[in-house]
Length: 155
Image (cartoon, rainbow, N blue to C red; front, side):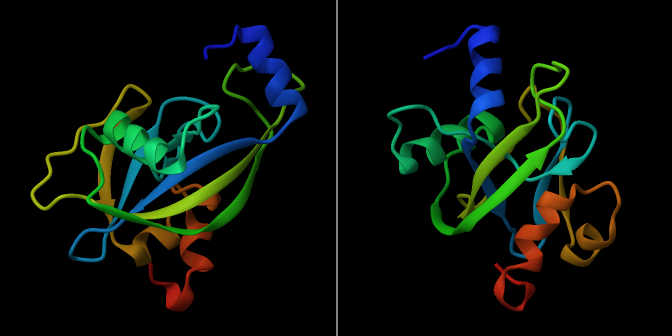
């Protein structure tokens, strides 16, 4: 279902949105991040992810988001946990409306040898060593929280 911009603004203003964030590590333990072109979290490195659609099963949403944002489907996934992401702005750029996501962090693996490609909302994709990710001011705090709260700082 596609909402008009005014209807979507009312939803964002009134309720939390439910989303999936993909926590993808490669064999070297590096984390896949995309440089965001759009709000919220614009101009930050962030894990790929997206909103769950109404009546969309979690497994179907994970497959769709991975396919849309990276060009591949996940080989496997597991739910890490639920996180609050609260932003002062919103995807529409409307004044006076903040955004609250309940983001489901999902650990994902990609099929071996997958060629990934960024979608329109990411200027580029890059693998980050975990220690560099945690120290970089270019990586959004909400991305860092997935790794601060993971047992032993691991996925």
